[in-house]
Image (cartoon, rainbow, N blue to C red; front, side, top):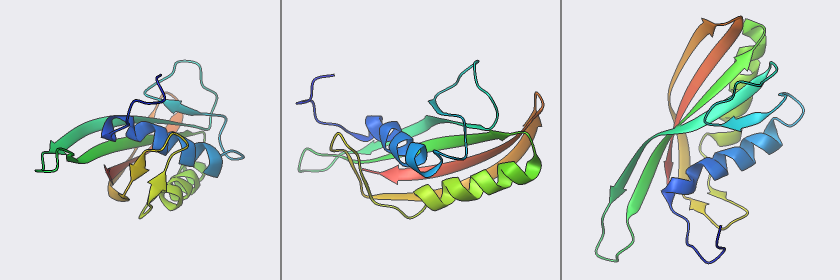
Length: 130
């Protein structure tokens, strides 16, 4: 990618990846963008669910993105513990990525849990403003 290309809310996943990779480095096998078929429990997957750009007179928009983080674990307790770690890493944070994207705010908006294919899943939804 061209380093001179300004980043926008479209790159919000990079902020999520950077924070979660550091915060969960010793707790999960990997943090994946979007989806994977080759993961070993426990792991985290994230993706952008929605994006909203609000035009302003200054030509820059006040952008927001909704990012969903899915935590997969072998036990229910482990899934909840990892979900708490994800929330601690992202909730009410201001983030500046290594590539210069500034996320002005990030906060939890929803959470649910599930069981699928021998894994407990905690799903956390965050709203990021750039």
